[in-house]
Length: 259
Image 1 (cartoon, rainbow, N blue to C red):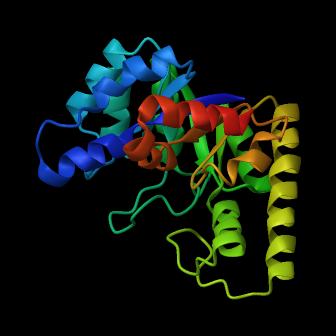
Image 2 (image 1 turned 180 degrees about the horizontal axis):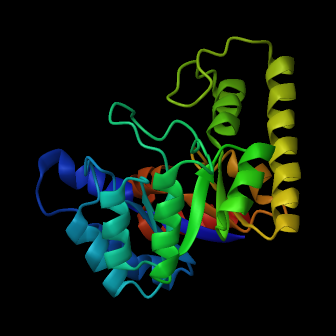
């Protein structure tokens, strides 16, 4: 199980004051020293955290593979092709959302998507699609010819949080859950079973499988036990913990939780 550390939230803190500190670039050496396998960044259209200069410097200077998340808009695809990260993960974006709320709506008729994938491949960049865990997403991803899919784990994370912490409101797909604990446990077990089954199917189809969104030190253990998930991309919970224990220790603790 590989860990990709998403360092966007370092830039969130910087952009709150629009100054130079903290610089997400400074996280690279720490990630490299503790054995992180990948750096993940999301260059959003509204540039709410990572900026173009950040993305360029991180991709140039990182000794680790860089996974660049971006929308399927042509302008973002052009930027990604120019930057040439190791991988581009195509994600849905809405300006009003606090965080990504679900997977891509995949269609073989969506020329933005098909042309974007072709363009990225032409520049030697492998492509991943951020999708909800469904059979349809698997079959369409295979037909689109991408190398990776990344399952959106927001529904799982939301059920887990409601079951274990009584959080009723989130920005994920399931809101205001006020159900008996037995029902929530059944829902959680069902979500895990679905992720396990679909990951195995993806493996048979020749797709590499990653997972991410809403994963933290408490809920990651069950996801990490799914054999056919090769990689987890985690950011907010690691950066949040780093405030108290430092980034190095926060990453080490997440690595331990995964193992």
